[in-house]
Length: 73
Image 1 (cartoon, helix red, strand yellow):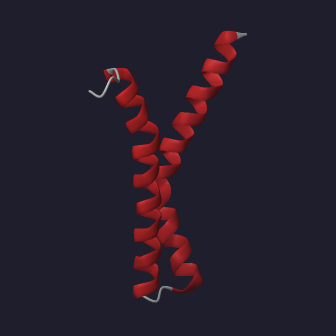
Image 2 (spheres, helix red, strand yellow; image 1 turned 120 degrees about the vertical axis):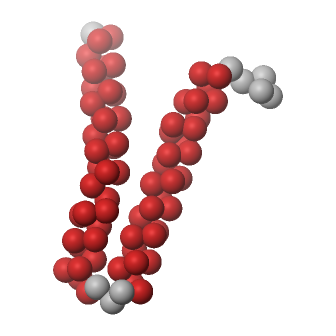
């Protein structure tokens, strides 16, 4: 497709596509906290509970990076 291989399209989607989706999720959580008038503590708990999946995905990327870096050495 447009001269790109399937692997390149997948890599682009996994980095920029999911990154954009995560930013959108942060916007949704912030909007939910604002509309519900959750306050500082409620906003903290909303971000903690709803954002925990994003931190897991970021941790996975970090672990993969560390493993790849150590594999080269």
